[in-house]
Length: 158
Picture 1 (spheres, rainbow, N blue to C red):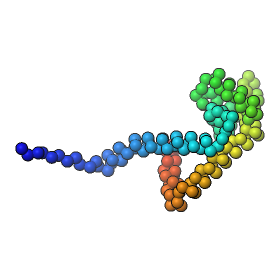
Picture 2 (picture 1 turned 135 degrees about the horizontal axis):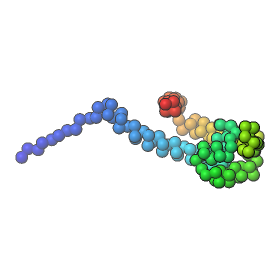
Picture 3 (picture 1 turned 60 degrees about the horizontal axis):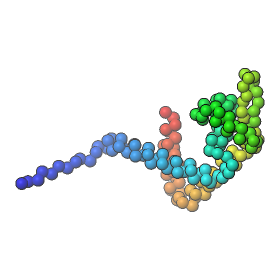
Picture 4 (picture 1 turned 135 degrees about the vertical axis):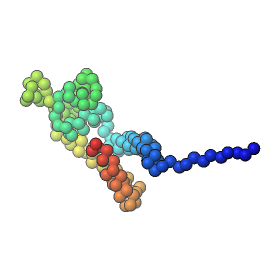
């Protein structure tokens, strides 16, 4: 009896590229998740929770906002946001003032201490990352990382 042997053809380049997209997406998400965790550890925020840190970052990036707008942006209940804001206020990192457009609302903004805390946090993370990249990567590898970042940035420009 003769054995019939079938060989499978290699996928066409376009098919291989399509197949690599889910793998690249999974790997990228995993790497970014680990890097985000490591960066959080590099900056010892100590007494702040991730939720509190997220609100500070949102305020520095987007400017003053109402508690309800912050709750919606962070996708949390208004009660949870109220607790987060109370803790940040106790630390002296945020302040409240009447909204000039609607006197019934208050706008939350960063205090000087809040701005300094964010600046210190960012500097600590950037310094850690720069040191890690300097010690673990060659100049050519750092150039590759910069090229990859330019490609990844295109994802944000849909």
